[in-house]
Length: 160
Image 1 (spheres, helix red, strand yellow):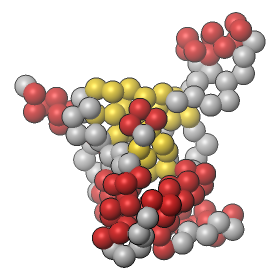
Image 2 (cartoon, one colour):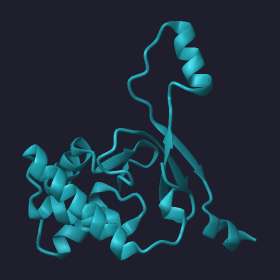
Image 3 (cartoon, rainbow, N blue to C red):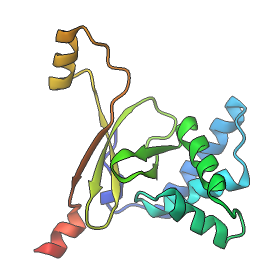
Image 4 (cartoon, rainbow, N blue to C red):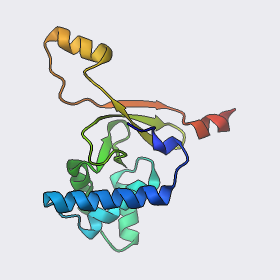
């Protein structure tokens, strides 16, 4: 799995464009409908590289004439999460675009408490102490949510 891109310089325009192409291809292959509102919601999440709440997303959509009420944002976010195009950040009750679209993975989220940027990193829940504890209890891990809060490199520099 690649480095958490939210905290590193990269070609953001190419990042957004390639992810949108991947999402469109996935939808075409699986019969999912990437409606204009869903596509725009994904674009907004990709452009931000930080977690957005449903009402933040709704503000963007409303300003662009794509939605007038909370159900519009919640339906779009529900689709994006179910399709694997976005993740819900439980600690913030917000959403972030998936950095590893189309890959089966168990993400961990590194959340900057200052700027709210979110980086997605890969994990293996069956490894390490959690995996050891699960095996000892005879438990099969099916889903984990790993969220760490701290300061991103840019915000660390700002506090020095």
